Image (cartoon, rainbow, N blue to C red; front, top):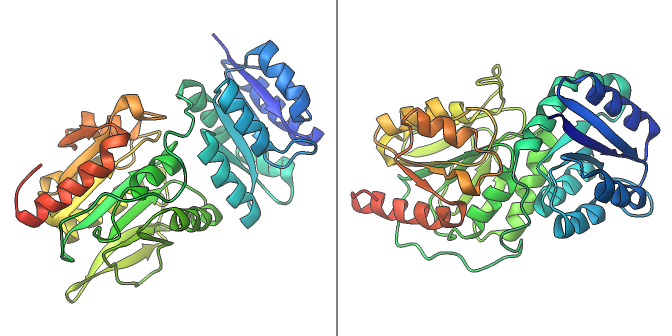
Length: 349
């Protein structure tokens, strides 16, 4: 059965361009196009779309308000149409927090040409969204008390990789980690402007210090480092310290930043002192890197299928035999904390 798509955008040009992309895609059906949230509300009830593309900036009722109401009344897979600006990035992070599955970047200039260049990505994301499990926020995006940890040291490093659905999964995990938690490096598939906004948002919600990683900086306990959207994040040794190395090399596993690149560097540099987790996301990035980590003696874990928005990356890692443990998202922070404590005492989970 065709995927029914509803386009909601105040721009007639965007509605036309997206509509044409959807009409040309095999297995998709454009059921409607709404210029504002009022009309969209009626269309959602009448047409029952499988996926909605939603502009953030609209008159009368903005996209975020509409999304919030939609996810409370009738949770539906939503792809946000977001401008590649700092303001657009901040709003997009908020939209993902409210329950949007993913977003499609909208170029600031030459929109027609820009969107046509994104055609494959748009179609792929609609297909993934149609198979996803939209969720309302599981936990409040407010600062809360973290899980106590009984560990001291700088040898253990934690790595987390994610893609579709990952911004909220990462938030939920980091929010529960102690400010005494080991240095944590994170790769989330996201464009450059968005990783900076993502890190800044997390930093207001977590007891750990969260920042976008910078080349050459020393990684320290109590800090989480997000890979910039256009660079691979690697770890290197500098004397007794671990440091960040940002790499502008080619795409790996179809991505830059790549989880595989980050995990592989951890396997080589940190080895048995590493703990790694792979969370919700499409594709298989991270699976081979996690296998290298497990073979190096690291403790590896994946998010379970039931709690994933998209069970792609964790599934690939599990099928490859790269994961030692599987946990639901709500137990991942506790599992990571216990894993770190076990590493410190020389035992396993």
